[in-house]
Length: 403
Image (tube, rainbow, N blue to C red; front, side, top):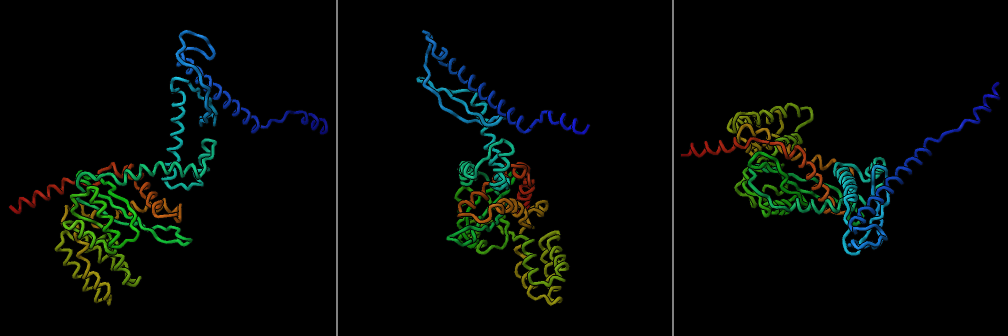
């Protein structure tokens, strides 16, 4: 009985689902390809006002062969024969329809790359989605197209006034003569007179020193940056001297968070929490005068705690962190630190981490600029960040008081 059942099962037809699916896919692609070519021929006949090889007194043009073109369709990659005419340029709505899909694929590849997906992962994803593996060379060529737009965006004129400007830099790695060296990319964002944030500039700084910052600030000013009243940044080497030279009328707000970290470097880890609470209390006061008085108390406490270096730093530099008090109280929380710029550069750093070491400074600059432009096109740049009418009202009150 067992032998009979085995023999019966041996006669059952075994179906290879993968092979059948492959045949079906091939049939669908073949049908799509045949249909597209038929539609193209029909369009050519209509433009010639006669069918191919037809002798007609109404004919206005003749065929001049064809050229082949590959298209990515939902059915897969197909090859179409695009007719050529002797007198007219053959333009087809059929190809335009599928060209849009080509463009959407290109846009998707670029968006994936800028969003932080490595080139290798882009290759894998395109193969999974469209059945065609996009090479790293193709991704590179698409990026070159994007970088042309990035460069225009990076050098476009700056229009309008920007009362608040945030500055910072990001240090990346580049391969140079077999060695890995640092390259700096400097960036600036501003809050315009309507309260929206804008990325004002991104440029290679070579080094975060006075020469680098001076060049960067002049680059911003030459493009039209004006109306700057407060610049927020860390205490970068040479930055304050460069600001005084390019924007002499602007106030400088030293980032309070970075200042805390500088103080903590002179404090034992067991006392960092207590010192942090003391420093935060300075910037929680209702006015600058009260903050300065609180700072004196903190200096005295630090001296009693035998933290002489920390006390000296607070005594000498706390005034640099109190410039925000000269502006509307509703703006203070967003002016006393450089957090807006820190968050933005964190996005750029997350993207550049995928690359590792860049071949040169220009490629590092382009990728950082591309990422920042990508972020600025989201809610980051379309959502109002501050109510700038409060600044206008403060100015009016100052004029009225002076009168």
